[in-house]
Amino acid sequence: MKVKKENSNKLIPLILVLLLVAVWEAVVRGGLVPRFILPSPIDVLKVFVTTIPDMKEHILVTLQEALTGFAIAIIFSLILAMAMDRFPAVKKALYPLLIVSQTIPIIILAPLFILWFGFGMLPKIIVVVLVCFFPIIISLLEGLNSVDLDMINLLKSMGASKAQIFKIVKLPASMVGLFSGLRIAATYSIMGAVIGEWLGGDKGIGFYIVRVKHSFAVDKVFAATLVVIILSMLLFKVITIIQNLSMPWFRYVEQKK
Image (cartoon, rainbow, N blue to C red; front, side):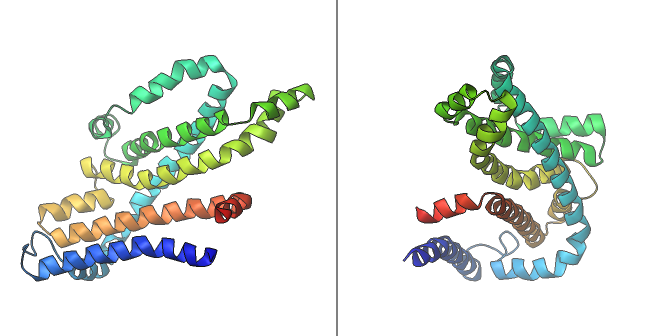
């Protein structure tokens, strides 16, 4: 019964996507929307296959920017989250600034980074770091705050140090929150890199989208967008696999629900 339930849960979104694609195809084929404005899904797939060789170099650049920025965001988030958990004064000082930082649209900051750091990879990586940093650190802080106080008090009564408490109780308890933030940030990383390339650069999927848009090749814009979706989903899946390998008990608990 559980296997059937899991299969049905996976089929529902797939059926919905197929239905939307079928409606899209019917609308275009019926002539309700001109193909030069909205190409059909079949047209997009054909262009996707033929343009993949042209996009290969751009895909690699975008992936390099996204993965580099994602890795830096993880490191910064871990260091800052541990500092905020260890020193309450640091958390009180920085937490409001983290919230305020998210009120500034990244679309405003990206051109400034390009102006300051040029058209290379650095400004794109900075954009990715800023986009990925917030969901990771907030999820990690929530996980650290969810620790059972009775467990902490028990370890303190046994003479455990703060480092031991963090290793034995806090870190394992925060893993679920950490991976939740990582999955969100993984999809954001591709988007952040594309935004940076879109606003200024000479390589990457974002640059490719701007170039084909100026050529009014809408089908190629859709094909490049499909590449962005695929890359984001792949990174999301990789994080999920890592979580299942590092937290096998969590997958078992989820299956029991």
